[in-house]
Structure formats: C-alpha cells, structure tokens
Image (cartoon, rainbow, N blue to C red; front, side):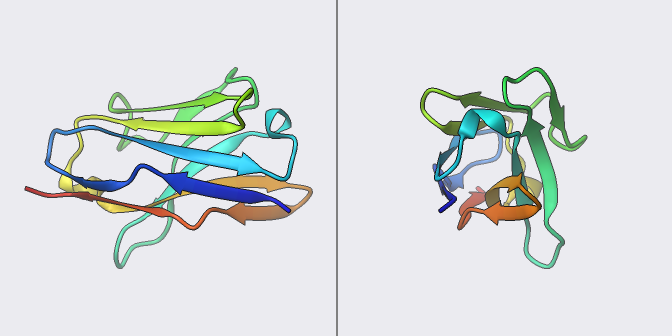
Length: 116
C-alpha cells in the first residue's frame, strides 16, 4: 500500500534552517507529482510546494517563495523540503502528499516549531 513517512522536523530559532524528508513506498514514485502541505494550529491545511515527476515544474506558496526549496530523488523514492530563513509563522505540522487514481494519500506529518 501507499506509505509516506516524513522526518526532519523539530525546534529551530527564527532565521534558522531545516530539511524535511518524505520517504515514499507502495507506488511508482517517478510517475507522480509530490506535494508538501502544512497546517498551523487553528488554521486550514495549505499547500506549501509541489513538484512534477521529473521536476520540470515546481510551484511554491507565495509565503515561502525564496526561502523554501522542494526537490526529489526518484532513485531513492524521496522528496525533500529545504527550509531556510524560518519565521514563527512557519510553525506547523508539515505533511507529504500524493494523489493517484483519484485517491489522496498523506503522511503522518512532522512538527516544525520556529521559536526563540
């Protein structure tokens, strides 16, 4: 079955950096676009970034442009989210996402807390 496992979250000071990793299994990873979403307390889940199967197209939320970078390694079935210049407003649970054959799949999420 489809499995998405995020890692790399934690506590970081404002201005700091973190890299999140999403390890995927149970499907042909290189055939699907991948996305990162986040959900802050009391807010709706929002799209952070997405990437097409061979990274030919990448999109970012306006709030993270210039600070975050999404990438993927199809040989390792892994997607990354490099986050820099982190702000307290980036505090959220970050989720990996894939949609295939009309079904949506989410990872369990990884907590990112930006605080001094």
